[in-house]
Amino acid sequence: MLAVNVVKRLPVFTLQVELTVENEILAVLGPSGAGKTTLLQCLSGLQRPQQGEIILNGRVLYSSVSRTNLPPRCRRVGYVFQDYALFPHMTVEQNAAYGITGGRTGRAGEVGLHEVLEMLQITHLAGRYPGQISGGERQRTALARALLAGPELLLLDEPLSALDHETRLKVRGDLKSLQRRWGIPFILVTHDLDEAAFLGDRVIKLERGRVTGRGGAVKQHGEGSLVVG
Image (cartoon, rainbow, N blue to C red; front, side, top):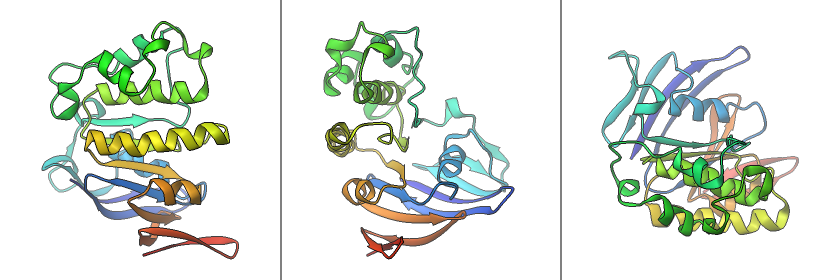
């Protein structure tokens, strides 16, 4: 389980979020500039909050009280960036294998490289480079790399935004199945209502750094949107 209570002061507003995430997909919905990516970066260790705490499965990743701030490599947190951040000079197999670290624990520690490639249906692409595969295939490669790092939490920053409509529908179904099989919390950042409704076991709405709605369903309301139970 993930427990978060953080405050991060930004130039235009203060990110202040308190939440818990079980073994589920939490969709974080909100407009551009709402603080969604900043929240993920605080969880991953790429940014440091000013106060609060982040606890993952009983391990303190960050605490302003005890002055704990684990570096990203020690957090066991996988991060799939919006642009996937694959190495263009590495093959699909090499990019995926880059996530393998020593001393893995948990579900990922039981699974090898080729099993993950097979699970994500990219084994046949192992020898190709990112420039030779589709957007959906690059997304799966980035997922393989993140999973092979042995995460206890997976962060996804608008991972479907660069995909065409048909590929997006296919990949979001894969993501839902993957979370069920892997059995760890996923936090999905999106500004797409349909995506949040389909993928999220729970949904929160973030606006100017504050949670303004929580629930299990999403509906359109005028020009904006509401998160409702």
